[in-house]
Length: 84
Image (tube, rainbow, N blue to C red; front, side):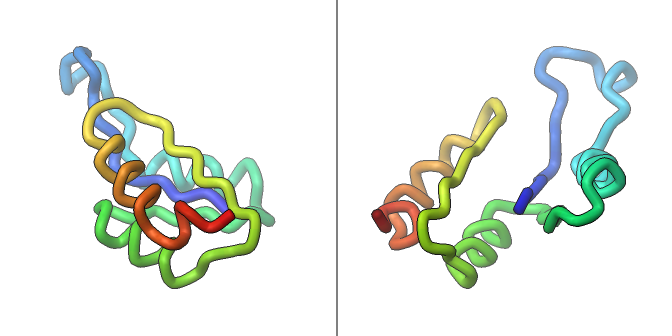
């Protein structure tokens, strides 16, 4: 499963950065229609979703820049992140 949140420019001007998290999630859905792809707008919703549906052996891979690290640390401290 794939969870996409909002994306932000990393130094580019807003005019040069015309993609949103919703656009990215929709593109992944089109490319892989059998995949569970969700667009969640904030870290609270992501943590709630992952906490509600932990899967044995699940690996969380978070890619991004900026404050996505806060979510990674939060999830690492949760039962989902520390289950082994």
